[in-house]
Length: 92
Image (cartoon, rainbow, N blue to C red; front, side):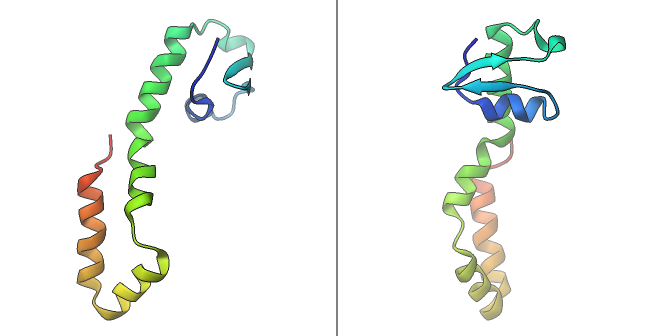
């Protein structure tokens, strides 16, 4: 089986012994051997829906230094800035 996002499998099954190399799933625990490619694909979609907003938010948030400066000067400016990013990229 192949995976485009090994992190999705580790996210769904955090304590399992999953191994991947170059996008290829090289080992699965015996209780997960029943997984088909369609299952892996569905897990990747579920992972993107649950976590896809995180990288987008991180890319748009001001640096920590700038955020601290906003908080020091006027916390409402910081709150509005962060809220705008969160509103632009809502969770799931």
